Image 1 (cartoon, rainbow, N blue to C red):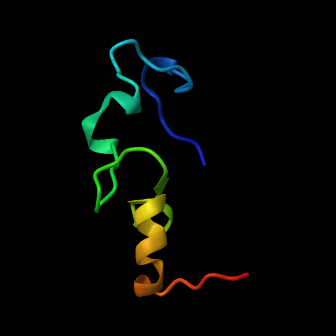
Image 2 (image 1 turned 180 degrees about the vertical axis):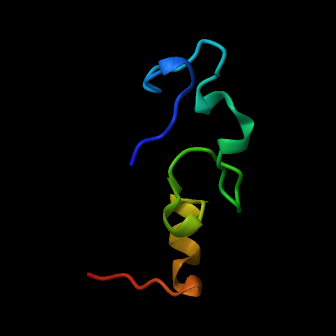
Length: 66
């Protein structure tokens, strides 16, 4: 499957006017409980910091295996 690109552009180079995705405020995730930005569990769109996840995991339905 190919896509049409204007002016023969290969589409592999970023233009200089585009900002990196990290600079956009829309893509920033924070913990839903504490508001922290580090140590996030984002799988399944949970978006909890690891400490909050440990506390809430049994209520959500996760089980701890030993």
